[in-house]
Image 1 (cartoon, helix red, strand yellow):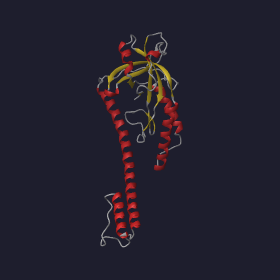
Image 2 (cartoon, helix red, strand yellow):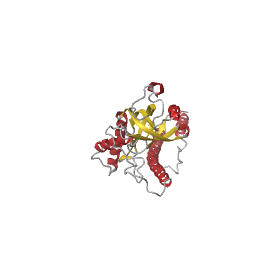
Image 3 (cartoon, one colour):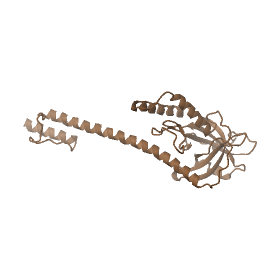
Image 4 (tube, helix red, strand yellow):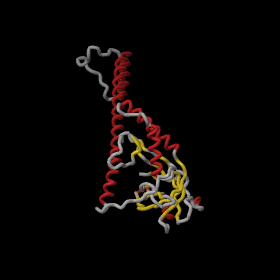
Length: 289
């Protein structure tokens, strides 16, 4: 009776482990086949553990492959954007565009922020390489930590003189606009134009327009460098902008106020800013491209 009870209990335990667990016949069994129920149970547990380890290794491989593919797709999207821009222009040589000197204040413009991130990242990663697997892993770990700390530390409230063009709907995400930051003295652009998310609560104000075609945008400027382990060189079209190995440029704007600007007015938040202000974090911040 005890033998029958033990056999029944063993069958129930093995059935709970999984359908892949079977007992071999006497002819198929190896010479060192376990003879006790406890030995059989330990053997099956060991087999299940090896299966789990193999699956975990496969998950790691797929995660790395997904990250590499995502990085490649971002570069391809940038290449297509630049190709569309080139195809939409005339064959005539584009006129030279004068630009203002980039301010030293890291949060004075996207171009200023880009230069600051390049400088900080170069200093932070000096002396590190990624020739071997161990070096690459150490480099990636430090780069990710740097991105997180920089996002936390490099931010502040600023008012920019800007132009906003090509406002377009992007479905459920809202609107985007092409923004150019201008020098307050010369009126010349600072760096290249960038695409930014346009919060819906400022649409009515934007639609009222501005006679000068310029706006004062007050927002919290937040550095948002993007870690991309597969990006080790700038690339052909330099998109997204390349900060350094494994690091791409990005930033966010938490919009606070938008007001029409006329010549002679200060570049500062309008007096009625609280009536139009957005609570920090209430809208999805804009991200520079």
